[in-house]
Length: 237
Length: 352
Ligand SMILES: Nc1ncnc2c1ncn2[C@@H]1O[C@H](COP(=O)(O)OP(=O)(O)O)[C@@H](O)[C@H]1O
Ligand SMILES: [Mg+2]
Image: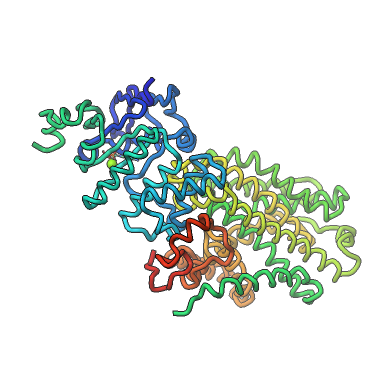
């Protein structure tokens, strides 16, 4: 059984149709890269999967259950963790407390176990030294780390990453790939939206191109990137 | 630069000492001061409750006065009409407010944001109109509590002042402790995340709906009991004053906003300031309201975290600690590195 099965999914805001009859499957433990021009609907897709928005039409099956109309917190508790492209820290809480929220509420852990989980996630993402700072004072780079850290603290079965690699140095980028690899090994499937192609190339086993709310291509990353239609639309050639 | 954090313990000690002293109020203060403090305690309860709703649970209610009025009329009904002892009736008034909160919630929770605010206000006004129509409760012009009821509070006027004082003090203490313990609990962790970013809180597993329901049902009995205590002090009910939108909602909002919304210290500070200013502003008549309104709008624009936010930036520690820390072993690894929150110097604190 696939972990995620998206069937004929559509979403429009007012008159603006952003996702149009999208079909997409994700296997257990797969790493799926998602690319597409700005405004293609990538973030909207995450909002639909994680429960920020309800679909206009269609369904989202997760482990065999249609979660398309479930509350965001229930989906999180089922193991769907996400990052926000524009970071949304709990600005007045400390970095540690930000992560603790996810471990306690999303992970459903006891206080003691949640503390340990949060500490481990902070160590893994390199934020441990900043644990006591109010999250609102972090740099953009650290805010993106915090997004990842929070999502990890729920112990996700499905991890949705929305452009977390932008602006990293080569070394930082490698460190990030290593973290994602570890989370994957721990038993999570990952959907990763990214403009930084080399990151996806190294990790994704499959790549889809979203364009105009539908799939333009779906398959092996190198084959997809070589597709002339993809080049035309996405790479602007 | 001097480490202001070293003032944390003494300041907290002072706060506790002050609270302990207030417990002995009737032996320490004269009648006028007791009346003044009784009013302060009641307003503090309203501020703590509005802060919990609007500051944390994103329920910006304009209908607090509805539950205060329900508590007032319930007290009148139980004591004057039902012959119940006023000490018992105060608690029953809280129960009535709780029962009224259930259908109210079912109604207003269908609404969000501005619509919810207006909805709560409409409900409160409807409750006021209903109270004015109830038979045996004085209708539009209100009614005074029978002398016999007042006598049950104490044989002499000073004994009565003391009884009401202690009721109000116990209520304020209970409201404070409830809020404090709630904010330190797992639910409080979620509420604090909601305060800072609702959507991100939901995405990390915080059950926003359950948190809202809990807060709404928790605040209603406190508001009802406050209304009952206020009524014991005023010795009368009337739709206009028992359900006063100005006194029990508008002023309360000003106090919380000026003091600092979304903190535990803010409502206390704001209510204190309100009473310090009140006597000076009372001479201004209707300008009183305008001055406070202008002050709270200025606060929203210049320092959204209020006076306590301002003080907090300088002090760098919470007077009433509700935040969580990691394990000792974890924290110990960073000793000597970047200093933990609350220990940094002010210059290291960029504007947020
Ligand atoms: N909440 C919303 N309300 C209205 N329009 C939205 C909303 N969210 C996204 N959109 C619109 O949907 C389109 C796709 O946005 P998005 O999913 O963020 O694209 P991407 O992440 O691929 O850059 C954009 O035109 C955007 O303006
Ligand atoms: Mg996007």
